[in-house]
Length: 332
Image (tube, rainbow, N blue to C red; front, side, top):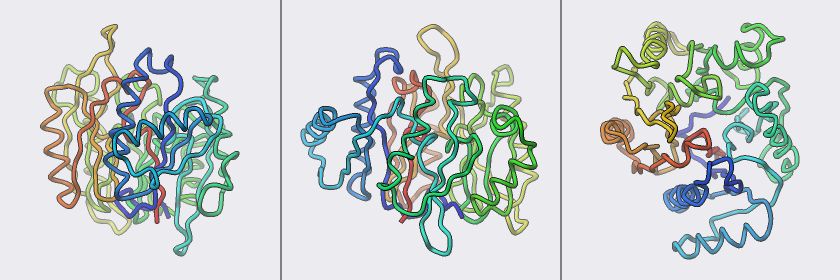
């Protein structure tokens, strides 16, 4: 079964940014985001970082030492990779009778839209000896950001992503059976769509997130003229009619939506649902938006036993994602 993200971690995986073009000239600022992530998490769990080569590893070590990071809590892996979305091409960890295993999905550059990302499908084939637990190959096109787990047998996903834009040779029912069998899920809840203008075709980690087995934080748009209004309203209605593995209704908490635009005026695919739950800290994506504080207060109220740290992702989003997209938890 896939544990809930709030369950205890052994480590958090990251891939250090290395291509300024992916971030449209903002990579140096993006490195600052990574530093904030490491500062917030490293005292409570191991940080495992992919780097391209020794030169970059030395650079990162210097950045961390200069910020008083205990580098003994950091593990580096020198390997080839293209992009930073380790949530999507990295391992999905599961537990079977207490034994840790990990799933290697087929990462196809978001339905083939980004062939330049195809090499990242091989990153963890090359690192398989470095990852804890038995490797399980599941041959469907998938990304880690497309699923979220209750830790008790319920998985959330969207039809827009996994039923319409991946594995077109398989029916929705066939895809659901693969998810159930591989993740140990008793139930898969299919929301319809993700957020507007999302190049991932509707990843669930921008929409709805379990924060315990019975409680879901849900992105919701109040403005009826906004492109996200109808799609997020429909998702709310689906969740209100859904139940957990025992037939119990979920408690649903609405998160407001940010309204960031790119420099060219286009609507950015941003959401406060893209937070990351560490052992003692929750990293919350913020966007220099009027709803930042409201979203932070809601997230804080949901995690009274953890410190909530807001991190500005307005530069990171130029690469196409936020905090949850660049992190991957490894359970204890």
